[in-house]
Image (tube, rainbow, N blue to C red; front, side, top):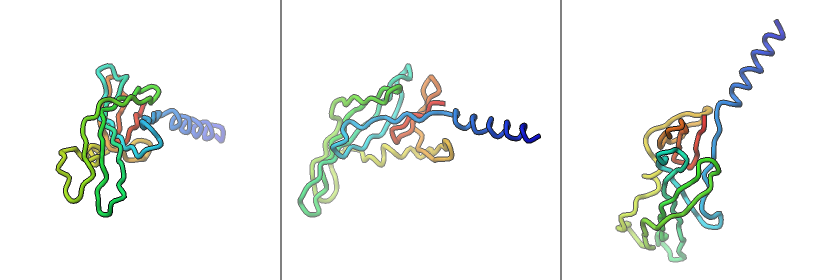
Length: 142
């Protein structure tokens, strides 16, 4: 009886350990202040597309920093990043931003929450391979 309980416990632990894998998608450069939001998979599920933004601080009091947004792609197997063309520029400014650039909060918040390994995430999309894309630049591979 004792062996049966130990065997069942080990089977449950092994099942949890192999439940899935998180693959982190890299930021373009660790020296700058990048924030990235992954949005969708390619048709074959091997590439992730999204937006990365770098913020350039200003030393002027009450001035909002300049923001540059770039189209970005990641390899789902390695997490390697490829920075694409600049899609939006918001110059340093005071007051309301009139550049028309989307905020990163609007890109990260999809209003769809899923729970993986007891942790809530914002859901972005699912690939043809069954991988789940999270807006926080993570891929969940079941």
